[in-house]
Length: 151
Image (cartoon, rainbow, N blue to C red; front, top):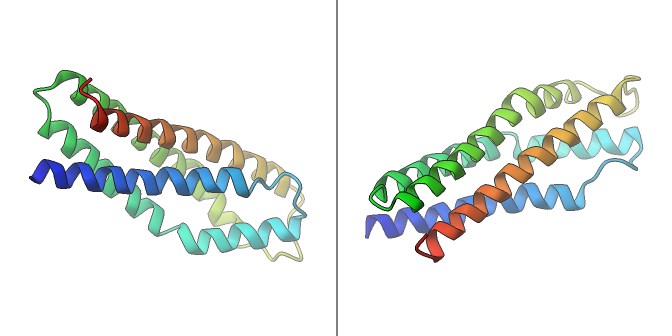
């Protein structure tokens, strides 16, 4: 029963994480935005997600590792979930050391007076976001696979 609950919440939270990051990737590509619109959009997203997503990520990593160790007798499931947790950790590290430092800088900007290098930071943030989105979506796929089929 405990494993079933862990697996349920692991699927739910990893799906929420992957869905949020995928939704940002699909719907918020900043390439054609003006500096003013970009700053306004990113600052709004930072305010909404900067606390929630790291907490959600940490809980998802813990659930994934817990599910892995609860199923360590099944080597394939165990290894699949360890790989999944590793991908989630990689995404978290990209966020912590890549995206969040840029977020901190962007939060100091006035949308009417954006620094000349704003496009460089925008492009770096987007590149890092794409990588963390991919690691999270792949992790989610592995979590699904470990739950729907005996691998």
